[in-house]
Each structure stands twice: as C-alpha cells, then as structure tokens.
Image (tube, rainbow, N blue to C red):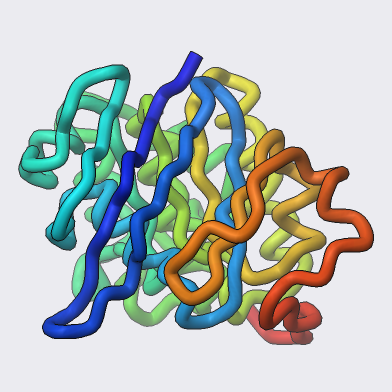
Length: 233
C-alpha cells in the first residue's frame, strides 16, 4: 500500500523553482531513502510534505487524502512528525522540559531514556548546551515518544560522529520495523542504503532514480557522494 504520494509537485523560493514536477510514492511501513547532493531539493520536498513550505502546483496525498492545503499542525495531529536538519529542539529549555513537551503532561519519557541513556544524565541541562550528538538524540526522542504514523527525517547524521550516527539509525530502523513509515533524507549512500527498502535520488529538483538499494550498484549519480567525515558529536 502507498502511504504518501506526491503528484507533479512543484515548489520554490521567489522566482526560483526548486522542485520541478516531482512524482513519487512512499510505501506504507517502509523506510524510503531520499538521496541527492546539496541543492537537489530534498529539504524543500520534506518541508512541502510537512506543510511548512507552500507548493506551487501538484498534490500531496496521504493515505489517499489530499492534504496539499492542510496546515502543519493538522498534519502533526494526524501523525506526521518532521525532525529537521537543525534538530528541532527547544534550546532554551532543559532536556526534561523538552521531553515533557514531546510526550505531554501525562506521558512517560522512559522509552527515549532507554534508547539514549546519556539524556538521563542531562535532564536539568539546557538543551542548547548539549553536544551536537546529544541534541540530535533529544530531537529523535520526539519520534520515539510520539510514535508517528509518518516520520520525516532531514539529514539526522549531519556533522555527527559515526558512533552517534549508528545509534540514531538503529533507532530509525526500530521505528520502521514497528510499522512507522519513514522518509530519510541523506547525503551519504552507505548509511541510507543499509536501512532503505526504497530509494529515490533527486538532482537539481528532478527525480533521477527510483528503485531498490541494490539497483544503485555501479550507477553514476550526479554530484555523489561525499565520504562520511570524521566529526566529534
């Protein structure tokens, strides 16, 4: 079954069109990797799906329902969660306050603390003072605690050490195995292909590949790909 369908999607900024008629289908309960170099339009596409950026034409169908004009909060209430590239936490709140916001007044943050034990040691610390990796773990906690129907992840590995990235991707894989439909935007082939069921590749706002991870072997992809850098996180 198809969870999310984008039909002739066009979007941009001012006079510049960034997405040029994108058609793609996201299978229900699968992990779909959306790959492409910088400037390909990946983040813009996720923002359009989440309702944070207007589309110029085309349609976004979620579960067969046209949500092209639905507000971001309406999509969130229906089970859509976006973890943006810049982590999407509340930097001036403590870790505990962030978790309380994610889970609600009557919920428990235990699931997030089990997945990311280091957060239990940072509960009174201001979220903005955490390391990059810890901030990303806190952001990913939102997905764990909300158990979304559709999870949109925008380069969650950006600037992080490989060990941190592996833990984050393990959590993503667990969510997908639990039935969450995941769309993972990445620049790094190895990380994304290890997890993905379906792969789409964007270049200059156009779809240039659609298929399974194994089909990418031996293909030349535009602007691809940066090696994973070593980073503290």
